[in-house]
Length: 107
Length: 107
Image (cartoon, rainbow over the protein chains, first blue to last red):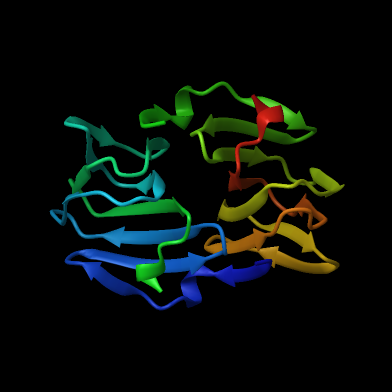
C-alpha cells in the first residue's frame, strides 16, 4: 500500500533476545529496523522469504551457507529464500532487514 | 542471489542530476543507496515496481498522489506500483530505496 510512516513511532518488539525490531509491512515487503544488543545471537534458521540485510551502525557477523563475514556500515547481504543463515552482534548494532514477500508471522 | 557486498565498493552513478546512487540487484529486489545534493529534484514519474524509500540523513520532501511530506531520519514511505511520485532534497540527504521487482533499467 502507499503510505507514509515513521519508524520512531512504530512500537519496538523484542522478537529474539537482544533484537528489538520496528516493522513496516508494505503489501509486498516487510521492512524491519533493528536495534541489536552486543552479543545477541540470531540462531541458524531459514524462511521462504528473500532477505536483504544492511548494517547502518556497528558490526554484525552474518553466516550464510557456512560463509561468515563481519559486516560494517555500508555492507549488505542478500539471502535467497530457504537459505540457512545465522548472526551475532559483535557490537551494539543498527540494522535494516527487507523481506519479500511480507513476513506474516511478524504482524 | 545469495551474496555479500559493500555499498562503499559499488560504483556511484548520477542517474538524475544531484542523485548519486549505488545499486545492488538481488534477483527479486534492487536496493539503491543515494547521496542527494541539497536542492536536487526528482521529477514526477511512476514505474510498475513497488518502492520503499527510507531517509537515513537529511530532510527529503516526497510527494505521492499530491500528498507532500518532509521526511526526516527514521521516516519511510511505501509507494505502490504505477503511483506517481516526486521529490526534492531540502538538505543534502542519504536515502535508501528498495524496489521490487528489480529495476532492469538501472543495470
